[in-house]
Length: 407
Image 1 (cartoon, rainbow, N blue to C red):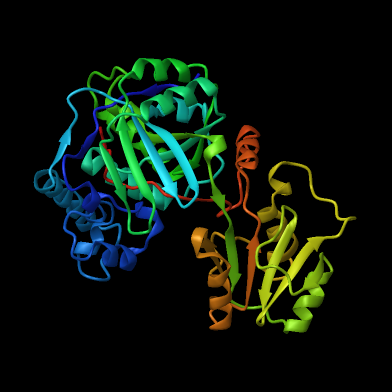
Image 2 (cartoon, rainbow, N blue to C red):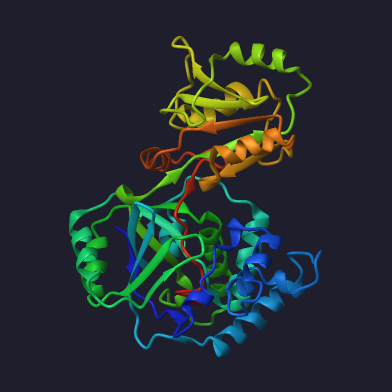
């Protein structure tokens, strides 16, 4: 049983276009500063407050979190941001080119996150958890939603479709060309009831936000003198999309050197694990194929028919095969989380970015992967396994600052 709950959103009554910003974790400080330049209402001043402090400021210093609070309080007044009088659910539609997906904005149960009714597929890093937990506690708000999915149901689809005929609260096109439209749901009880028949929800993107919400709840519960389980901090902000509408793009890799090998020696080593073809398409045609860019040329890689993969859902993933058969044994990359020789190129940056990095000498070799599928994500989560780092890149991205959950 999946618990979803309406909430009283804190949201812009005006200036939504200026407030809406990219998620805090898809940009670095310099990129965030450039995006927010000349726009005092950008939510990046709240989600990445170091942009308003001197360059070189420690991202986890007290000054950064104090600045987040200061900027948040200022935005509430100057935007203004106002809290809804009554709890509501919302519909959030994203349109990027020909792709369209519509999700339900709700708060979900921290208990269900903790007991694995809301399933995970990714490990979290303690330092990132620490950061967002402190950010939530200082602001007493969850400012960026967790991106969830579920195995779609026609009754929920019908209710969502019916809600799209109303006048939207927001209808804006972001600088990247993605259109974001949000509606308030009139009949929240019907959707809440329908989700009671959904057995499981799955985190697609936002594992650190979800983990931080759990940690923030634990701390606030300890501080409470009369905890009931119904407090707002027992829930976390989500947007929930059916699996059929989700879009995962490739999450590619570059490596800075060939581990001391010449080009010829490297290709010989790769040929012991893969069959190699020249003049390949930069994008692999299907699962079980990889494209490799080396010295100005694309090569196609494919495991030989005799190759035997280990048992288990994760071991069968293309990202796992590349790691286990090439990055580790040939290039010496044991842990992609910590090895500074490997970089990840996600989403819309595509294979042209891989070519640029290699051609400019910023990488020695690049690997283009076939995207992980939503079905693979669900299977890994159901098996309680963990995907390799940087296995999925979801597009389009949600915008922060449009619907905020106060705790």
